[in-house]
Image 1 (cartoon, one colour):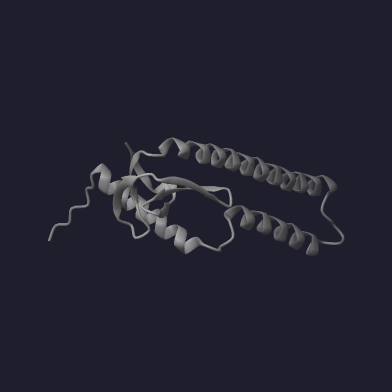
Image 2: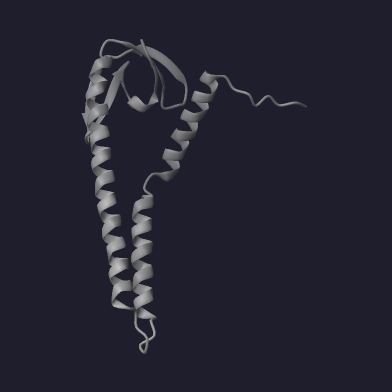
Length: 145
């Protein structure tokens, strides 16, 4: 029995969207990777301080270097958050251009549908497109006509 694993562009896109949808469902409520990294760094630093040799404590410059790394990590997180906000704002304003246009999208059940955009709604800073009285995440849009 031979299995054909080659997919055309549409099938590949559908597969990627389904995998993304399933991953989002699985990861709901779990802490972000950034939170895990920062928490692990702090736990490692505290453990190092607790278990250091009292006759040979950590050198001041080593401690300062580690604190500088933590400060850099926090600053990088803030920059990342600001970039995410900027991208979100851009995406939210760009959905207005889709009003009245026909879109092809993947619905919540993972099936492809096409219809005209009726409205744009916002909730918690995120934009949603209304099609057939259903809210669609713009990330699920495959095509705009």
